[in-house]
Amino acid sequence: MNLILEEISKKNEKVFKTFFDKHYEEFVVYANGYLFDKDASEDIVQEIFIYIWEHANKLNIETSLKGYLYTMVRNRCFNYLKSIKITDNLELLDFNINLISEHVFNSTSEEDKAIVYHQILKIVDTLPEKMQQIVKLKFLHNYKYLEIAKELGISVNTVKTQLKRAKSKIAEMVTVILMLLKLNQ
Image 1 (tube, one colour):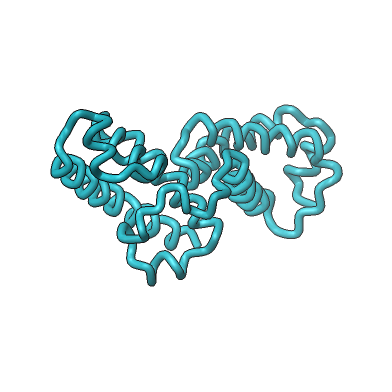
Image 2 (image 1 turned 90 degrees about the vertical axis):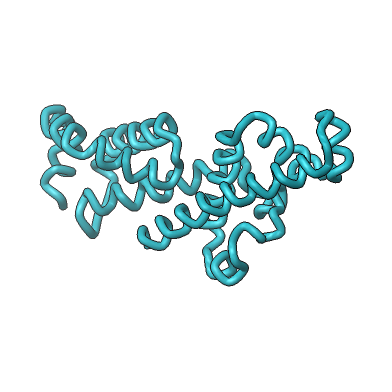
């Protein structure tokens, strides 16, 4: 058994605190690579350390404790993404997969697709307000160009231009996200 884990199972607070202090930030950064949400990443890492503290005597770790924790962080991140209802298989924001080439997207795992989808929603929230409204009306509420134009009091050409710009911005960010996911595999 790992010596650190053995000491933690004996409720050695000093060893636990040292291990926590040494690795906490590292695991938060790792989690944030999946979630792009620092608060949620911190929560997940804290929950994992609490779990280790409470269940150290029941754990059977075949690898290193650090490696085990990396796996726990990754799995909890995926569970978190699932829990926030990323369950519509990317149909809600149907960008007709024009954003990403079908080849790249089809070669991506379901978990990675969920991460990309979650990030697309976050990217949409960072767009300028009017562009956000247009994207949400088009892809979340299935409005037609003319309906969006009437709703927002703008021309159909403005709607098309704003959607084209939004798709371009989202596509750039999704490409970066996909590259990061490939690096983490």
